[in-house]
Length: 102
Image (cartoon, one colour):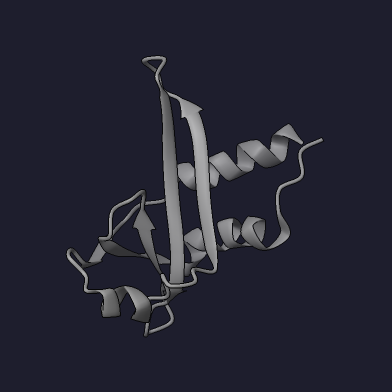
C-alpha cells in the first residue's frame, strides 16, 4: 500500500550517519564488518527536485561489536559507517519480509 511506501521513505529520511568507523578500510576490515555477504541492501531510485534520476544505495553489514547498531556503506563507497539499531530495524524488517505493493 502507499502507506507502507511512505513509512519506508520516512524511515530512510530519518537515517543519520553519526559515526565513521573506517574511512579507507582494508579488504579484511570490509570482511570483518560483514560486507562479504551483507544481510541486506537497499536501493531507492528517485527523481530529484531538479528532475534528474538519482539512486540511493545502502548496504547493511554485521552488527557492531558493542551491539548498538550495524555497519553500513553508502553507494559504491568503501567507507564504513555505523547506524543505531533503532534506525535500522524498520529497514531490516522490509529486507526480511519484502515490500509487496498492490
